[in-house]
Length: 117
Image 1 (cartoon, helix red, strand yellow):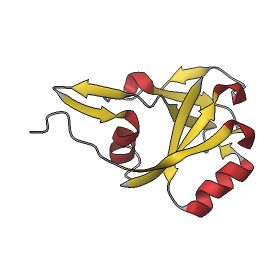
Image 2: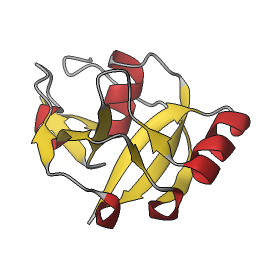
Image 3: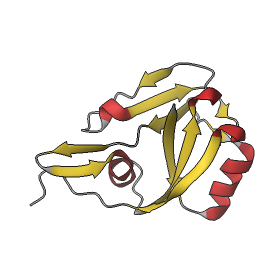
């Protein structure tokens, strides 16, 4: 199965991740998500746009596709209080090797608040 991770679209950062792998944060966690669209009050958003705007504060971002064959541990449901929570995951391992990572694309956040009029 494929999961996704977003990061700054800086090409040097993306190339480093693609060459060296995706490293965990200081707590040993890698944040992943399923990039589905979800609807709240007739407003449709992608999980990636929601995370970019509301959690990591990026207007433009790189989406990395991660093959679950690179997981050494089980995914844990991320405990966030947001509409996209059911599609957000935590992987507790030091890194994901580069052979399991591909650049899915560069995106511009197109997020609308769920009570958007």
